[in-house]
Length: 206
Image (cartoon, rainbow, N blue to C red; front, side, top):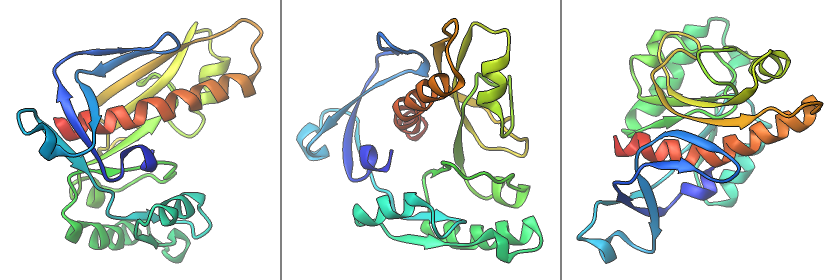
């Protein structure tokens, strides 16, 4: 996702985007046209995305390698160093707040954040189910084993409730008879990689 957005310029078109032949998408109310420069399209509503920091609570997170390869500043704040969840969040906010972020994007950040964080920063997260169903760490497995005929992905704003923030966008995959968990999981992850950049742009536009 970082590669898809970092230092990219986008122009906004007021046209609802409903997905592709593979995925059905809801919540993306604009089309985002990637352009070489915002100055080229001064007559349109355009903006540039800059990822100013990639931060992880695990020093061996591969996302840090991806960020470094793109020339993005990285930082590690190891959660294991803090006994209390709120103390970690306090230090996290102290790092992020001075950056004056338009949006904090969570990805693979498997921690329940306290109100100290959620009241300080505008953040979004992605979850591998059609919320409000199957919240928590086992969303894919619970969705797979459920009687539902559809699965999917949800992007939402972060609030005090686990996976309970306002929805930004959702994408749907049709469950296949006899499909293995591994195959289903792969299709859900493919949808995540497709939807998340679009939802981040939608959140920035809003």
